Image (cartoon, rainbow, N blue to C red; front, side, top):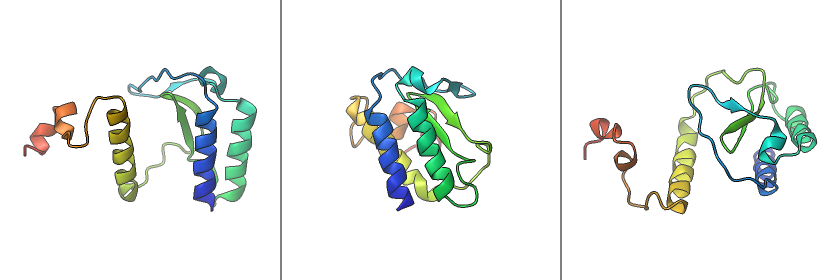
Length: 124
């Protein structure tokens, strides 16, 4: 239930954003106030408070919210490291979907076509 609610909150926040320019991070995420990327700060705080009250012992301490490539919220423990092996497929398929939507790739496009450095690790 918590995961479904988090997904709903994420979709809701994204749906109400007006701007579409995206910035990609360098060494660190560029930070911005939520309003700069079309997010209502009060609603964002409500969502974070809800997560804090309805999550495990870490609450929202490890939560980062990125919108259009800008960090608009960070918890106190965002640099804590976790293994995310089971999530990797979801992230990868989402990125592929975005690349296809932007017409920068097709379903059969190999990663090394987009990131040439990968050719050393995945030659065939």
